[in-house]
Length: 245
Image (spheres, one colour):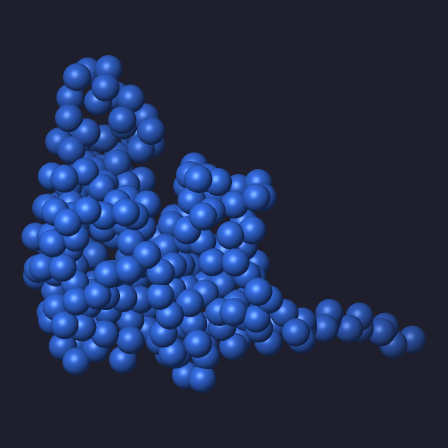
């Protein structure tokens, strides 16, 4: 079985705060408020957020779902992208039950999309394959894999509920062009809606849209087929009941 996930953001306190992992005494603050509070008081944001629980929740959810003979595809953003954060994130991922030979990484904007030898060596200690994009077969579908949504979305206003850099045009060059019939799995936007762009052939498999859990190929296929059916054959409105005289 193939499983897909994205945007783990391990050892990334601000994202952990966005996902509700602020420590109880700071739970009344938004993530932005928490960061400003830390800056004003010269505290470390990491000390105000239970990012360890966030990280272990993600790891435990993967291990509870993905078995040793399965394949795991991570579509980018393992950490903050900083050296210390990446090193810590990779150390956490060494606790995955699925073996390295069955782990595949698509680079995101929080990795170096032009990774040098040093970072690539680190990543290859944990993942068997690494690329900036890819493709795989799910059922009878040939599905594209990218950290980013289709390219044309970077030319449009950012929908509500997405991260502030979700449609940043600097990332458009790394995104696939939508040819009208391709299927795509992506992350990046941090949307809680897996179909945030209302495209039945484009599915967000990031943890924010899937309750912090990986997505199976069966779920992907079901969502693609169901979404395509609803677009092609929208449900008819409920007929108005006629009043008997």
